[in-house]
Image 1 (cartoon, rainbow, N blue to C red):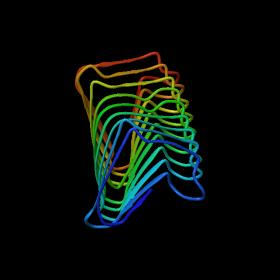
Image 2 (image 1 turned 90 degrees about the vertical axis):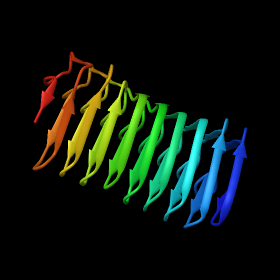
Image 3 (image 1 turned 180 degrees about the vertical axis):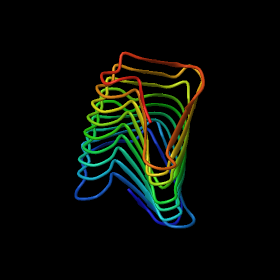
Length: 212
């Protein structure tokens, strides 16, 4: 599905496999997509790829077992993700980059080959997310990004539960749990990187609960 202008509304779509491209591709100013109650698996590229000032809303949808990201938002995309499952993808569950902004209200990003959620040079507002068992991080925020996290779980990831790098800032509130990660629970690395956590639980992380 390729949308470069106008609004595409996709409801109850089942898509298995794609040929050398994303399952759903949305590009450009004025391009808007609404995806609901759908299942996109085994894409050769990303399951959903939005770029270049596009707007997208995804709800009650599963993106799984791609060779790249479950959802990629690149270059000033505005996105809302609600009750999304992005598991077992070849790179990231959700990848936000290039000055994009995403609001996530309810998501599972488990068992991805790199990180559950990767935010690079962008803004992410994350609520009620479970990001467990990823090969790298539950949440990686890098390259002068900003992220807020509320009432989420980051457990059993191979590196850190939540990491802020290269001048990024993460604010964590609510009943967030960070536990059982192989290295640190939370990690702020590099000049001007920070993680501020109020409330919640950090426990049983392999090399210590926090590093800054």
